[in-house]
Length: 431
Image 1 (cartoon, rainbow, N blue to C red):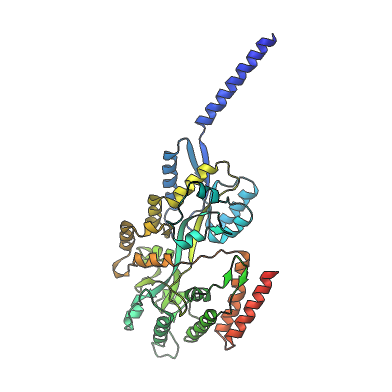
Image 2: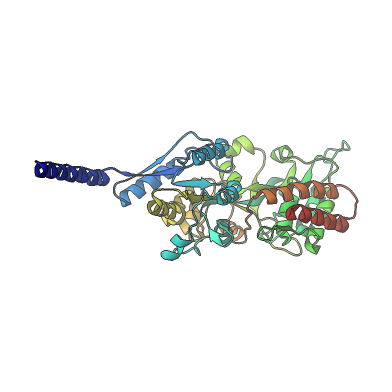
């Protein structure tokens, strides 16, 4: 009797084991992605899920018995709260989109997996990426994400206004001197009513000017601020001189109305608003094109690059497959080519943005002589700088911004005030 019971139990165990193995084979492995509707830059986009659907189809056709799942309807404004709730509940997606302003927090709280081992074991090449987007994914010498797509800052120029004044659109290596000369010529009263109604520039921030003059005002590794350098003093002096050209505040609305020659914008604005019909809705009264940011005496034509990244959940149960999907989204030439052609952003791969078909399609999207040379865009990306928006960095920028903007609009001694600013910021950072 005991023998029969033993054989029966053994048979049952075998059946259970076989069923378990069968279920393991036939039950698909579900890889989840955390993403949001629209894009990271708040510009029109017809269907933001199309690219992910393409990636999911190609991925599942390559890896048998896999499925890619994601939630729809989450806006970019809701995404951070949605992801936080998922993390707190322990069911965060296997991989997730990581906006630049969320990266530092997700690294600090342990959400993102350290990718160094994955990169080292298969000698995954990071040299294919633009330097700024690659370095944006690194903290303390380790990689916690891969770049997905990026957007650099550019200077928009009102081509019509310049040509009406007999001024050529500046070249790609234009300088502060060029900007000031043009702005001083254009800032004037055109209708004789005693009020200035045409302007040179609006929206040009002290950070943008600092990058263009080679200033590195915050060291993330050392957590220290640097505002007393000659290049920073020079930056504020230039902005004070530029600001003095106009007695009133020059706004974005004035640029939209064709009254301002230059205004910084993101590449995403260019991609969204240059083609029909959005071009007609936003800028119907003048022609415009894009330039790199102007360079100061100590710098180059440098722009900040905002990178949207992809990270892996550190508690994912499918890390190997998650890594494979991350590599596809970030490093597959054909998929990144789709991003460059169909989205309002730049591919993170240098070879994609230098591809002749990509350049032809992008330049063909824009009517007539307004087309922005993709070679210029490639150069802007190559020289780009990145920022990790840590709480310390944001505090430095907020505090410095308030004081620098005061200095720009008053006659106080710039050098002494920047020394005091640097001292107070470093005292705060040491606490």
